[in-house]
Image 1 (cartoon, helix red, strand yellow):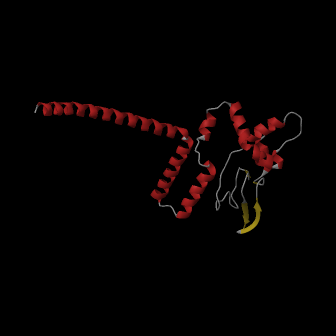
Image 2 (image 1 turned 90 degrees about the vertical axis):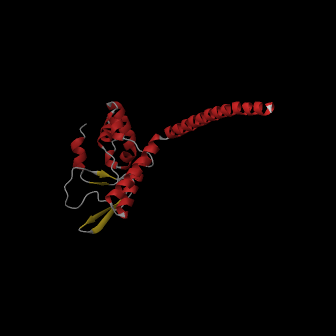
Image 3 (image 1 turned 120 degrees about the vertical axis):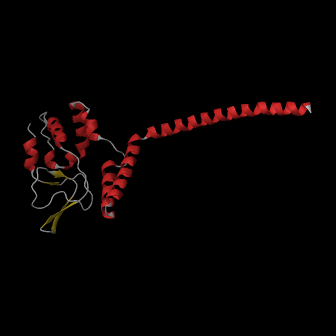
Length: 198
């Protein structure tokens, strides 16, 4: 009889220890899982932001009850513009000094300037880089998807558009007259010449 009492006492003493140990292991496991998920989320913050923006876009489309065609164009636009990464580029550039901003602009526009003959300057008089840097700071990226209008016949505009990649069809009176490809441009050269003074 005494043995039974001691056994049950011993059993009662083990149970609380077992419970505390189990609780500590659960807390340790939860901390480990939290650390791993925190590390995983910090690996690709721009990709995570992109996914959030896409989810926000889908919610917006549903809320506004936009057509499937418009939804597909919006998704295509985001995919072309951000390519799976979302950055607040204007805000990032605004925080930089002029020299860094010019360096980033030059990097971002180099391929375009190399494709458009009249944007290149190869005089060898020491001012080629100055021209290139000035030109790169006035160019701004714009993205269009199939079916978008860049401009319409009869509209006045203050912009000139250069095609880095893709195809643009030009219509006059509803008839396609020409297709333009990489390195082509739409608009007047006067727009560029009025802004660049070297």
